[in-house]
Every structure is written in structure tokens, then in C-alpha cells.
Amino acid sequence: MSAPASAASGPVDVTSADGPAPVAWRPVLLLAGVLGALLLAVAARYGYHRDELYFRVAGRHLAWGYPDQPPLLPLLTRAATAVFGDTLVALRVPAAVFAAAGVVVAALTAREMGGGRRAQLLTAASYAVCPFAVAVGHSFYTATLDLLLSTALVWLVVRWVRTSDQRMLLAAGAVAAAALNVKYLAGFLLAAIVAGLLVSGPRDFFRRPMFAAGAAVVVAALLPGLVWQARHGWPQVDMAGQIAGSGDFAGRPGFVPFQILMTGIVPSWLWIYGLWRTYRSDALRPFRFLGHAYLLLNVLFIATGGKPYYLAGLWAALWAAGAVEVERRGAPRGWGWAATVPAYAVTAASSIALTLPVYPVKWLADTPQPVINADSAETVGWPRFAQDVARVYRALPADERAKAVIVTGNYGEAGALDRYGPKLGLPRAYSGHNGFWYFGRPPDTGGPAIVVGPDTVADGARLHRYWTDVRPVSRIDNGVGLDNQEQGKPVWVCRGQRAPWTRLWPEFKTLG
View (cartoon, rainbow, N blue to C red):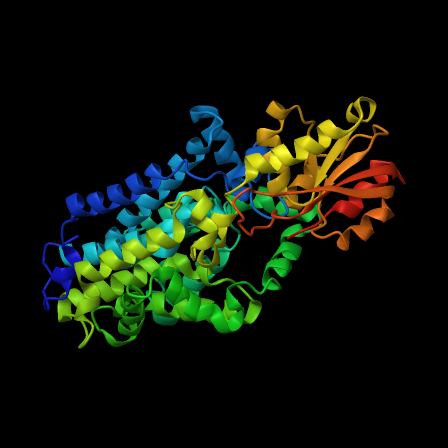
């Protein structure tokens, strides 16, 4: 990683009458390969993330939509497990590939903005050590693919601005179509880019046939999911409200500070500098739309309670803008140290320590990682969770065990029992959480229900609405003292069901 040090050494003229500088393939691919290899090396440590367990099951219930997401991730999960086997690594390999590909796209974005070798490497290095990119590259969930696709979308628009190659508009439409089938939030990025282009130009894209073709691709890809949402009462809208009200990342006051933490305290200076230079540099004037898009999305998501990582698709382009200016002008006074190999090495080490499963699992609770990256705690304890439920199941009298049903409080728990339960002799688990509610209700067997959750014994009083006899019989214990959503949760045995599941199941429907 010599690029950061070189980038700080002074201004470099990268303009050429022959077009943009060559792509620094060898060092860029080396950075991408190192990140990908690191992610693969730790892929099998700890366990599944709850979203991965959810997607495994959703992939067997393919639909044009789900209450909490579009259809592409469950489809890709089914494809990955069909090709590579139903294993944890089968999901982590695509995640690592997506993360490594993002490093390359980041470097290409810098090239399109006039960056030579140094700017490309500084941008690629910023992406490769970014704590958020490293974290989402470890697991296979919506943010993993959304980051790559949204970064690629911005790169294609930047390339169109530089080249006026109308094929880029069609390619951008195709990438946007895929992104919208991973997260509907990609629509906000697309709208912000269009708004930025209308404000600062170039504005002639509306008159281009390829823009119309790209828009048609977006509409065609989005329409089936929107029809599903309309037929099911627009649950995605309710889901967005639940997310906005969750108060994660310190809410609105934490929106910008958490972007700095997620991009890395040291590399964050580069995208902040790039944002500023899009408004100050004549060389970057064609790309000023990026600054408009970024500021517009900040205002929008702060107002609506969005999450800081909703802007992640623009970070690579802003890093690129900053890196190009550093290459041309040198680093701002007093900031040369931040573009050096030691600074990036420290950021890389901290990103690994705070996001990846590098500790023995029994030590994890005593590290800062679960506080900084709560997702890491959600990958621990699922086999033991299934064993805890199995002990309750096996303790039932034989006649009750044959008729028992299992209901869990969230999709991660139901997904874990789907993954580990069959080998323990457990029947299928059901949950009313998000998409799992649509996968089917429990059968009316007349037997007891083993219910995981509510979270406390006091909260369990509401179970009396559905059963006459409600008893907490066990608690979940991950065995390593790690505080996550399942740790300490009661397991109940409920008898005397008050109504058939056809009447009760609508009341178990939850979003969150």
C-alpha cells in the first residue's frame, strides 16, 4: 500500500490529451485480493448472522416481494446454497467477492474523475480499510450487495459525465434495477443523483434515448415488487416507520458523526475534503452533482430518521474526489500524515479488531467489538439456542411432544431452528416476524406450543391471551456470557390454546 504515502508527497499533474490515466490494476487488485482473502479466512468463525438464517428460509419461499425487502437477496441465497451447499461459507464467499469488487469500483471511480495511480490507490485503500465495508463484507445481507451496487451506480454516472458515452446511462439503469431489488432505498440515491445533475449539469441526459431505455429497465424490474407490496397493503412503508423509530446510531444527532466512524476516523478526512473540493475545484466542477446528492440525502435522512450508512454508495466517489485533489495539489496543510501507509495500516488494524471475528468466541464479550459492531454479537450462539429449545421439546411427555409446535419471537430464531433443528429432532419452527409470517402458520394439532420470547417473564403475561396455561420452563444461554437479543430470553410451554391458529395467527404478525 504505497499509494497513500505517495499521494501526500506533493501535487502531480495527471491530465493527458490521450484521456484518463491507465488503471493501476496490479496494486488495486492486490488491495482487493487482500481484503477478500482476509474475509474468507474468517468466514467460518462464530456463525450465521440472523439475516443469513432468515434468507436461507426465504429462499425456499421465493416471491416478488417481502414485507421488509425486495426479492433479490433471498433468490441469491437460494442460488448460493444450491451451487456451493447449505453451509455458512457458501454465503460468505459471495460477500467477500462483493467487498473485493467494491475496492476495484472505487479505484475506477477515481480514474474517471481524472485520478492517476496515486489517486486510484488512495481511493481503493480508503474503501478497503473502511470499517463499514469490512463489516458488511463478512456477512451476506442486504447492505453487502447494496454497497457494491450503489457504488457501481455512482461510478457509471461519473463515467457518463466524463465520456458522454450514452451506453453508461443504460448500464446505470441496469445496475439501479438490481439495486432496487436489493433495497428500495436505492431509489433515493438514484433520485438524488438526478437532482444533482439537474442542479449543476450536465442536464442533457433526459434527451438521450439510452436514458429512456435505462429508465424502462428500472421500471420493468421494480414493477413486480411494487405489485406485491400493493397487494399486501404496502408493508414496506410500515417497516420504514419501524426503522425510523428505532433510534439506532444515536438518532439524528449521531447521523453525521457515525458516518465518520463508519468510514474510519482517519480516512473520513478524505471524503470530507472531497465533498468540499467538489464545490471549490474547477477540475471537479463536472462532478459537483455528487456534492449536491450527498447534501440532499443528508437532509432527507436526518429529517426522516434514516441510518448513516444509507449514504454509503456515495462515499467512494467522495473519497475519489478528495484523492484526485490530493494528487493534483498535495494534501491540505497539516493532513499529509493522514494519507500515509502507517495511518491506513492503523485504520485497517482497528477495522479488523472492531468488526471481524478475530477473537476466541469466549473472549468476545470482554472486547469492545459487540458495542461498536452489534452484528458480531448476533452471529454467536445459534447452535446452543437450538439445543436449549430441543431440551424443552424432549422434556415434554411423549404424547404432547408428538403434537407440539414451536413459535419464536423473531426470524433469526426461527431460521436457526430451521438450520439446526432437524438434526435435533425438532419440528418446524414458526414466527410472525417480518417475512416469516407469510411462510405459513402452525398447524392446529391440539398440542402444546413451545414459545421463545417474550423477552422477560413479566412480558409473558400477554401469552395468556392465547393459552390458558403459560409456564416459563427454561432460558436461552449462549454459553459465553455475550449480551445479544437471545441471551437470557425465557422459553415457555403453553397449553390450552384459546382459538385455532387461523384466528390467532394474524395477531402474531410483527414488523421490525
